[in-house]
Amino acid sequence: MEEIDARGKPCPQPVLVAKKALKAGEPFLILADGSGQAENIQRAVNRAGAQSTITNHDSYDSVEVIPAKSASGNRSNSSSGKLVVSVPQDSFGSGGDRELEDVLCRAYFHTLTELDEGLPQTILFYDRGVFLTVQGSPILEDLRFLEQKGVTLLACGTCLKHFNLLEKHAVGSVSNMYETAYELGTAERFYSI
Image (cartoon, rainbow, N blue to C red):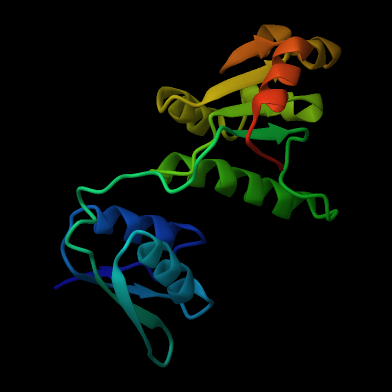
C-alpha cells in the first residue's frame, strides 16, 4: 500500500493530495497533521465512494483509504442545477483580518481548480471583486484554469471602468448588468463569497 506524507501541508492541500491519489483506484495510506486534517480527508474520500479509517498517532494522524471498485469509472455529478457564484469583494470573508481573508480567497479559488464535480457554471465578479480578474491578481492562473474547465467568468464592465481597470482586465469576459441579471435569474443554485 502506498504511503503519502501530507504532514505540514496547509489546508486544503492534504485533501487535494488524497483526491488525486484516489483517482489511481489503488488503496493508500495518507499521513496528516492532527489538526482536523484527517477528518477532512475522510469526508472527501467518503463522498467519492471510498472507505476510510483514521488512526491517531502521537503527533499526526493517518487515514487508510480503500477506493470503491467503481470509483475510477464513476464521475457522475451528484449536484444538479445551474450553480452561479457571485464575488463582490477581492477577499474571502469580512471579519476584519485582511491577511486571513486574502489567504482564504486564494485557497478557495485554488480548491475550485481541483474539483471534479460541484464546479459553478458561472462566476460573477463585481464591485471590488473585479480586482481578482486583472493583471497581477493572486488568483489569475487559477481563474484561467477554471475558464479552461468550462466555467464562465464574467467581470462587471461598469465596475472595471469605475476602478480604472478596464485596460488591465486579464481573464474572463467583460460583462454588463443584463448578463448579471440573466445569470442570477436563471441560477438554480447560488451563493456569494
